[in-house]
Amino acid sequence: MVNYSLSGMSAIQMRLHQLFCHFFYLEEQFQTLY
Image (cartoon, rainbow, N blue to C red; front, side, top):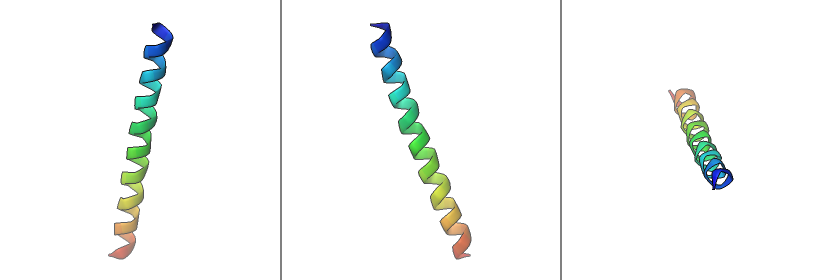
């Protein structure tokens, strides 16, 4: 039960990390445009 919840939390953290990386990547792309 505890291991399952921990793996779920890590999965959510990985998804948030991917979203943040994607957001910063887009921000860099927009900065290079202007």
